[in-house]
Length: 71
Image (spheres, rainbow, N blue to C red):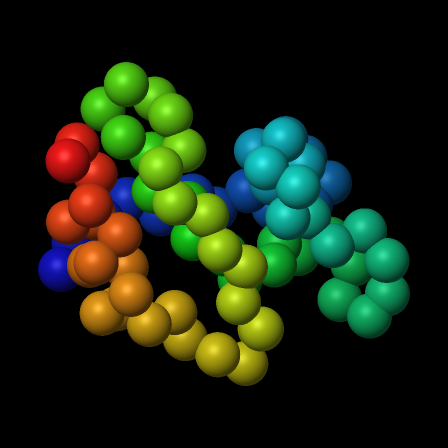
């Protein structure tokens, strides 16, 4: 599966700040939370979830969210 990923590093972090997922406190300040946002064709966030840094997002969950867009 191919999908675009956003890489928005500190000290800039405008996108991660706008989405509320920039870690600004130690430990690990300046990185984003591990998160997934699915944006529909209209530009609306259709799915958003923050995962623990040591956990890979569940692809089945994401595919289910993608399948529900536009229904």
